[in-house]
Image 1 (cartoon, rainbow over the protein chains, first blue to last red):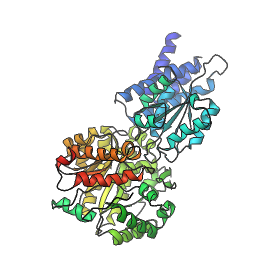
Image 2 (image 1 turned 120 degrees about the horizontal axis):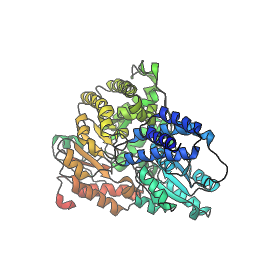
Image 3 (image 1 turned 45 degrees about the vertical axis):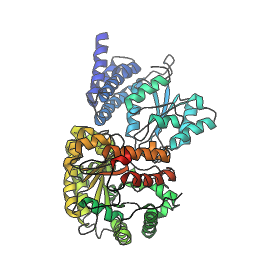
Length: 218
Length: 354
């Protein structure tokens, strides 16, 4: 049984790295049939594969297309497993990250990569999509009690929507409850410091490390 | 505070003389046109986007005040395929909805006669009007994005990228179709006194691997450039964002006259690698310097750019690394012009910026 479990989890991890949606779905069905806990299958199988893909991205063996297709394979497995996730007690509360592309900008590939890798890193992601007003980031973070707000933009013309989020958090008296991180082509650590954000990362793998550091899970 | 204009040549006289190696007053520059200037002048951006007469009058006013060194006119290729745009007040237009572009969509051209197609009527009206108003003084470059970027905007960049792995033949079919559309469009520009400029962000090394650049971006851009060069009688300018270190020599082989880089690259390195083959353009920092800095920072940034690239064998043209943010302070834009004269006075003298 335990070697069977290992075979399936290893196979799932490989299927993500190999960008093989069909195998990801098949092995997820096998896992369900074997009665393996769905959350464990996701974390130790599928998400493990995504973390390995993230490492390959960092070492420039994989590029954006590979990461996107790996993520498709992961999602094919998750779709099968979702109905079998046990929700009653015991499961630890995940740290929540609200993420989105700032208002006026629809370039969302960078945001999607951060989402994929941070999610694979064990965080719960609330994805607000693109062209998101500052108010929506703040309202969602408050309502969801999110620990981190992650802001993305590719455009020099829209980056000033970012300090608005920090200002709004201050106005509402909740600045210290939510860490704000920023990323995207035109940004820099200096910009992050200037607008009073809690951190900047220059790519998706660093974003995961940054989130872990900020919430004390490094 | 308005900057006193010191130019003794029109931008067109200057760039022509510079290209031919004749004496000039100062180095030509390419501080790209920006919505920031519209904001300084209190321009109604909605009207600017829809009313050609108003747009042309605005361009004339801006030229007289800021000596803008190039005029731009552009086509929307994704629009011809049915992609829809949003035009936010004071911002940049962006794609709202992409199109699937499957099966039969790729069997027929989306445009046959650019001159009579009603969708392009505003383009021709603007082109004729702006050339008449300023064409003798300022060079006009028809702006377009590279085939892979236009393909990405049309079908969605994520879809395009996934298909490079899943279905490369489909990607080639889309690229070929987009290229044919672009070739049809530019064929109608024969005989016009224009140049071309291509922006190609999707071909950036931050998006495409070198292998994918060579497979999906380079061949189509090369064919577009060949035709553009024939039509305009001169090679186009090219701008690609982000990290392009690994494909710099491939980029040169696509056939641009000049390559403009953003702040991911070091001008000295670009000069060393390809300065003997193309003019180098860049890369005053649009955010760290222009948006967040002071006039002193602007001066220092231009000085650094000149130090690094002034002696590039095929020439150096100062410009921003990317689009100027709308909220850039006006005094920083004025400082660009001052620094241009301080460091760019002809003949260039390294003592001025050492």
